[in-house]
Amino acid sequence: MLNEKIYQNYLTILKEELVPAMGCTEPIALAYGAARAREVLGREPEKILIRCSGNIIKNVRCVVIPNSGGLVGIQAGVILGAVGGDASKNMEVLESVKDEERARAKQLLSAGICQVELLDSPVVLHFVIEMQAGEESVLLEIKYAHLNVTKIIRNGEILLDQDNQDQQTEEADRTLLNLEDIREFADTVELSEVRELIDAQISCNIAIAKEGMTGKYGLGIGRVIKESYSDDILTRMRSLTAAASEARMGGCDMPVIINSGSGNQGIACSVPLIIYAREMELPDYSLYRALIFSNLLTVYQKLYIGKLSAFCGAVSASCAVGAAITYMVGGDLNRIKNTIENTLANIPGIICDGAKISCAAKIAASLDAAYLAHHLAMNGQGYAPYTGILQEETSETISCVGLIGKEGMKETDKEILKIMIEH
Image (tube, rainbow, N blue to C red; front, side):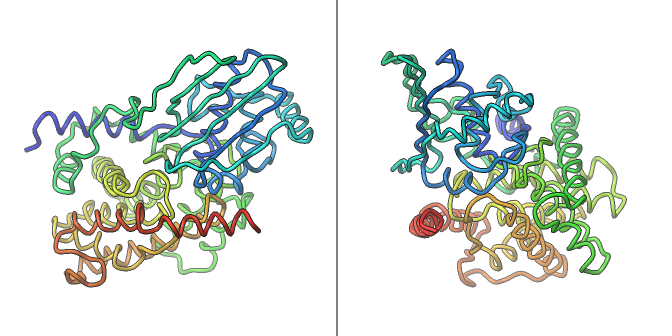
């Protein structure tokens, strides 16, 4: 039986994590920062300098900005946020951009008012926006989390200076997460306390999956998977989940419910479960509890990796969804652990080379691995401890994979960024 502190903490984690976002979260963070800076400046900027950490550059340069009319990249996101963003809408900052604001953003983009520089920072999620208009100037810094403003300076006057690594926007203690308590919470949580959150995740993420299946975005990967593979439950899970990601990366203006600051992770840890439950005609309560399990297990894994790294987040989310399928069909804790370890024995090496439409293909591949891991576990099969990076306990394996992603792949991240910038 969970104690009340852990129960309430897990509820708070879900409320903090399962929030709507329109478009890829890194360009949206830039747009949010620009909208906030424009509010402080009080007028349209004449010059903008945006200095971004490597991971921000990596995750913004190739994605279409939602509600932009097809604009791509860092300058587009910043300028559109400055011209038409509404910072009060947080990760949906670009929801209400008007035609005239899109047109103005394109004019300013063509005029070259926004310059981009690499910010040499040990913090992977870090950028600084400087705006000027006449004699007026504003500097705004966002650090550690997508909406975490740590510094605002207007005309040399410091309005805010708070290097808040613990992110005061996050009240829950994620270090209390562990697999056993996650399962217990999923088993016992009063569904009325999470129904609104989970209903939003189901409706938003399935809606964008169906939109992605129209083939209007990227390579139309969802339709290609559907037409190229046998008509079975795995094909339907892979096609719809990949389609949702591709639509999001391709500039679709429909919101998704994110997880760990990522729309792709929010999609990957939810859509396959929704499809599976509907195909198998499972009751709603079973799906709700599985989604709670999957969301918290994704957050648990990302606790060790961090929000941004050279480690593809599709692996973590797909690992969680595979384990959640095992949970949903009545697999015991040992089978759940085997599903996690069978996945992490297979695909821990997928690199993140930035946000873009090919993230959808990585999600499809990761789901294939996670579903195989589920079937192996349900057949009583699991890789032995110390097979490669696997450890004696599943929690140790998760922390070791996190160590690889956060620390071991730092040089990989630098090389990826170097290749992307120089070519």
